[in-house]
Length: 346
View 1 (spheres, rainbow, N blue to C red):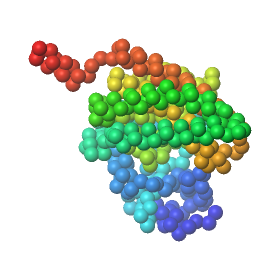
View 2: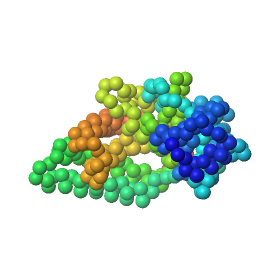
View 3: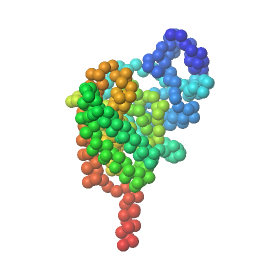
View 4: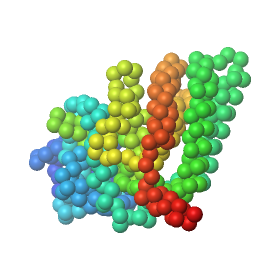
């Protein structure tokens, strides 16, 4: 395929004279005489990518195996920048294997655990839940209500409408649980989680590259410093999908905690995130706003039905997890000190 001038300049910065250049998705595959490389155009700033590279180098020096090394340019730079657009390169890995969910989630837990002590110098980048987040979640709930009203008013509801109306009723309890829980979390903690780490934020199959002797997490364009349960909740939403042939959420959590034990507050926060019907909302929005996203009415209906089944499993697990942490959670050091001070004042 014909290369544009920018890509040609980026390839020149790496000192390559490729035998073949092709695209697979949004990744450029470079076949060079000394190897095969994946060249990725990033939406992130150069400064962010340089920080990530430094952090990833430390993780790899500490023995973490599930990140691909970045190939330096011929000037030794980890990032190639052309016309304010940033690129980075890694060895090309051909996906040719599947790994159990529990193996992958252990790798994610290890990533969170090893990255946690490295982000202390980036406190200003730590995110927290604020009033604006609560308002956005309420607005999204209002949008679901509007879709429900629209579906009810149709003289001839579509198959998707009928499934959505049934699902809408199923969403009321978990969504209210989510909103009340997050409001209380913001009120009690000012929206700040118990601890921070590097979060990928987009953990799904296309961002986990599995090959014969391992797997790697890729595409960190949307990385942020946040609570590790954000990634864990996303993982559970995306991977535990098919009826009967995937691990239960409790097995995923158990595997995760082998490498990164969660605090009671983090488990309650995980329960809240799992009660948020993110993917159901996405399907409803696409159907009612951009119906061309689906190949057919049957395709849209099937995906909604599958996601409803999946969400029911997550909601059931979220309720059980919430109840278990209420009964068994132990106070943190700060909570214990506060209780001792209160007792001494009596």
